Length: 128
Image 1 (tube, rainbow, N blue to C red):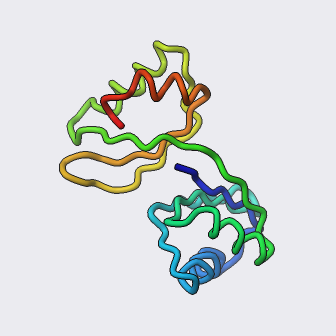
Image 2: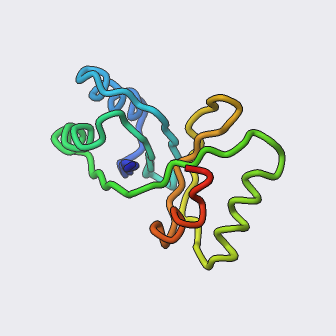
C-alpha cells in the first residue's frame, strides 16, 4: 500500500480542493491527515487508486510523493499499539509515521511507515 504526501502552501479551502479533484474522478480517500507547519500544509492520504490520484494531483499543480506503508490490523485493547512499537524497536526498526485508518471487527487498521519494511513485515506477520 502507498501513502501520498502532498506539500502545499496552506490556504483556506486547500483540503476541499484536493478532495474535490479526487471525488470528481471517483477516487475514495480511505484515510487523511493534515498538518500545517508555518505557511505550508502537509497532507498524508491513502486513496483507493493511488497512482491515478497522484497523477491527477500533480496535473493540478501539487507536489506529491508516494511512500510505501504497511497496513497493520491491531487489536483494539490497551497496550496493543505499544506491543507493536516495542517489537519494532527491539528489532532496530524505526517508525517514521503512523496513520490510523479505521476500526474494523474490533481491530484498528493502521498504515505504518518504517525504516526496514521487509524486516517489519516478517516480524509483524500476525498483524497483516
